[in-house]
Length: 177
Image (cartoon, rainbow, N blue to C red; front, side, top):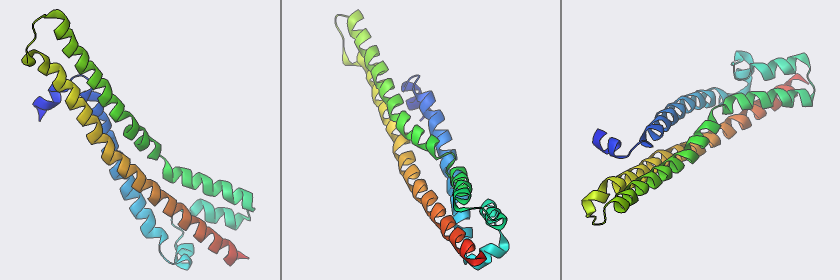
């Protein structure tokens, strides 16, 4: 495995960094969203009594008598806090295939440099550049595809959390009036 990684050339290092960061972020957000959904799926009356951290700013705003616009601003801030980090997953999913493509170009440049220097070229002489081209392309896609799928999944979970927060907020406002 290390041998294949090394044959991929210099672009394998940023692809590796993206894979580690992407996987760590996917796991962290998955755990965060699972916990939030577990909390928010409880009965609204129970949530108003327990005052979980995720709802505290909204409930405090309702208690202070915030108007709809102020409540909307507080809710938007909460949703942005929940979604923090998702854009990095989207970025990683987008740039890793481009890094792979860059590695492909670099590998093909190496192959053509061999051709330009040696008038008689055998396939073994070109193999290093072609290896690099294929490995980096594959690595970029292998990293990007699961991260893209995970990003999409987490976006849907974040939307679900935002919806539940709105629902509970409306319940709390109606209960207060």
